[in-house]
Length: 149
Image (cartoon, rainbow, N blue to C red; front, side, top):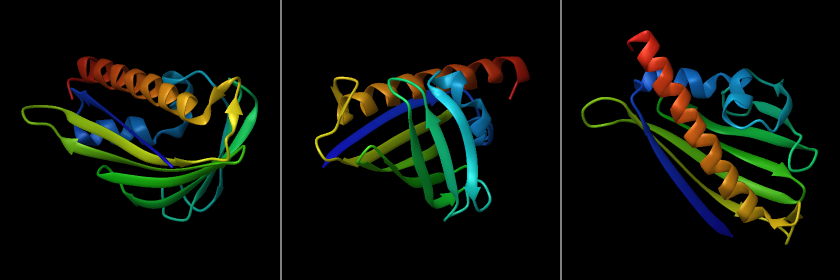
């Protein structure tokens, strides 16, 4: 098992940070690796709902993304399955002292020695996480500047 974690702080309010995060149609704004994203079961972000995520890069695959818990704007958790890799991940949204929101993610990766495009699952997921959350923070900050949120 491998544990990862990453945090960003945005100037966005917790409400706006959640709105941007939970808008699954914006995925490619944060990491241009997605094909189609479709909720296959349940209502988006409700516990038990299932999102099917097509990944195009570094190789083509589909991730089964099952929401395990969600308190909108506060915390969400899920389990992903693809390529023999299982990932349990959580994201929390905390009001930051002063103004803004700290968005913290952490998770555990269980895999079967899978290599993805010549890299370990741990390397791919940690690199992706950093890219996704830094780009997400930038979008949130830009929206805050333009909306005055």
